[in-house]
Amino acid sequence: MAVYQIANARGWPRRAEAEAEIAASLAPRDLGSRIALVEVAMAGYRFAEARKLLAELQALYPDDLAVQRLAIELDAKQRWVLEIEAQPSNSSGGGQNANGQAMQVQGRLYTPPISDNLRFFVLGDYANANPPEGFVQRMRAGIGAEWRMPGLIATAFPTQSWGTLNRVGGGATIDWAVTDEIRLAFGAEAFTFDTPLRALLYGITASEYAVKATYRWHESRSIAASFAYLPFTDGNQRLTGGVSYKERLINLPGFDLTGLADAYTSSNTILNAPYYNPARDLSLTAGLLAEHVLWRRYEKSLVQALMVDAGLYAEQGYANNWLGTLSYEHRWRFDPMTEFRYGVLLTRRVYDGSVENTLGIILGLRQRI
Image 1 (tube, rainbow, N blue to C red):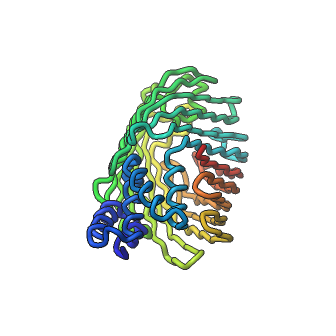
Image 2: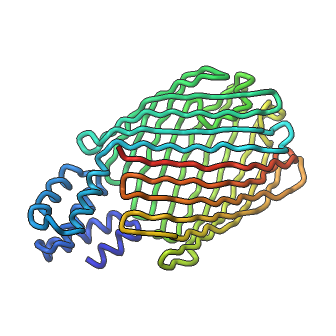
Image 3: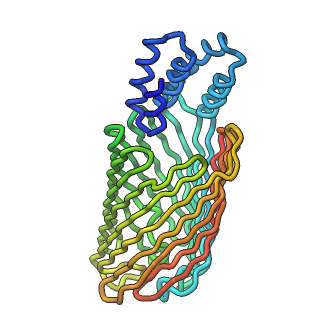
């Protein structure tokens, strides 16, 4: 059981499942090994199997706290799930690429699992900004389906956008855990939500085709590389690529300190487009993320998180400058049903040589209904 617990904590689901099955074969009546079988069934989206195994445990150990907590967790995983993120902000500077007062809200509502592996969802997004040309906004709604199985999650969703520009869109994603350490992600989206808002004022949209590869040694260290191709309707073709590295430097009860390093580059084929599109640019940043548990009681907790990073920004045709990010947030967890976070975000960015400073508010909710 000790090896199972280590593998589970380190985020190695395949190894955790193998160790749970070994433990159950050696001690089939042991409560800990039987709980592990329920946990791996839930992790593999085998909810019918998990319910059957849990019912046997509840009949034998109705007053056991671990069994009771397991029942609550299984119930939570079979509920409706509402996810909402909102970020109002206000920027100063930025020249022709200034956003001014802006808002972005994204939300999804998932159904309970259907036949274990299938979920449907509805999505709703909203974004606005105040560039020099005037107010621009985008509202988007869609429906979709998500298929989940061990090592693979796939989604597909059509969308309709309206506001400054009305267009039909849609997308599909695949997230594949090749091994416990290697993960590949693919995505394609017509009229991507990452289309610059300023472009909408000129009737311009973009699609996106993206791929990401992640190698995760364990919960304390990972590296990821990403690439994306965005063809714009004005003929511009944007290529982006990035590498990010994370390593936990301090891991103490109630406190973690993680080192962050990121590199990002992009190129565009059309100059002087009516939205920010550097011919070539490069950013190199490094930072730290500190997470401190202020309070915990069973499944309830409050964590404060402070993140700071800074680095170089270089754009072809302009002098090098520096950029940075500072954020502080509280993360509440009220049992497995409710997770809520809020915080403040300060950023310094550079667009065509003009510095833009932004103050933003971070709000997030994950509610099981």
